[in-house]
Image (cartoon, rainbow, N blue to C red; front, side):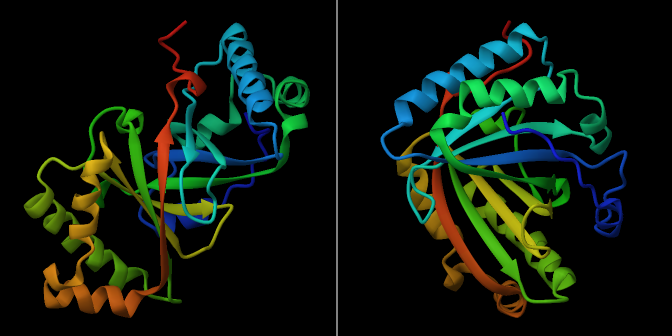
Length: 242
């Protein structure tokens, strides 16, 4: 896993209405693999998971490959459901982890990066371990400056629309806390089959939106993009699987 560099912006979490003790934080990492070295990376990453198990790592690690879009072919992993304070007390020794990264997977990676994302429970609908879904359709939204309140109004309407038109769909909203745009949001929609893509398409047909929802989106969003992730169980680790 990515070596941790902890630069926390506590004031941001408080400003968004998520106190330090209640925020649910996900640390995401992205890996650009060297050409022709995917097999070597996969084998090395699996060795790294085994090393984490041997060290008693009690954090979950979830792995995906990006299947389309500008980041196609990149590997993503994340450790979910943390408090900010968890990152000050990781059971694994950070220096030792960095040393074994260099042994296990660093030789096969062009570069890597990471970010901290705060889960927006108020606007999300999801079940336990939603991240184990076979696929994720991932949307990224860049806001215009100073439009957070307007976008929050859009998110409330989106949740109602998703419940009305998509039933039991799992839709997870996050906001970047560090490692990305300061006004960047993400929506992760869980899918068990590619056929469920029709649901995503229908949710973003603006002709289906109430007028206020459409107006709030136009007023708040500067740019948006989407991509498709495929879950890899063999590249994931959960504390109860030892």
